[in-house]
Image 1 (cartoon, rainbow, N blue to C red):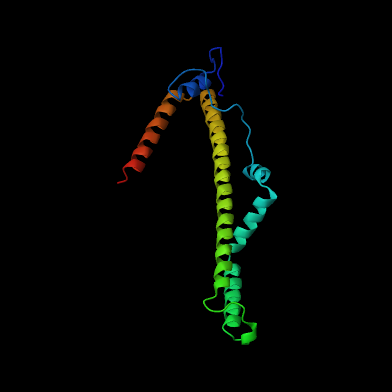
Image 2: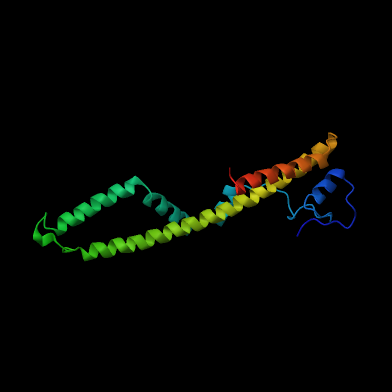
Length: 176
C-alpha cells in the first residue's frame, strides 16, 4: 500500500525520509495519495437524511428550550390529572402511569439519537485523523526537501527530533 520503488532512491532528502522508520526499504509513506480533503465535505457525503434528522433532534434535546417545554408539559399534564381543570378532564390518574410510559419511550428514543450522533462524531474524528496524517506527512516531506535544498544537516535535525519526542514521551509517562 505504500510507495515502494525498485530503483534506489537518489534524492538525499527522500533517503532521510525512507530511513526515518528505521528501515531503508524505499517505502516513503503508507498511503497512495497526497491530496488534502475537507472534513466537512467528506462528512456531508456520509450523512443521510436520517443522520441529519438525528442531529437536529439531539441538538434540540440538548437545549434549554427542550427543558422549558418539558417543564411546562409536565406541569400541565400533572395539573390536568390531579383535577385542577375538573375531574372530567383527568385521563391519567396518579401515579401517572401513562406519563411514565411516554417519558420512558421518549428517553429510549433520545438515547438512540444521542448514540447515532456519537457514532457520527467518531467517524468525524477518524476522518480528521486521516486528514491530519496526510497533512503531517506532506509537511514532513516538504520540510526535509527544503532542509536538504538549504544544505541543513538533515540527519542532525532528525536526531534532535527523535530526542525531543523521546523527552516529551518520558514526561507524559512520568509526570514530575
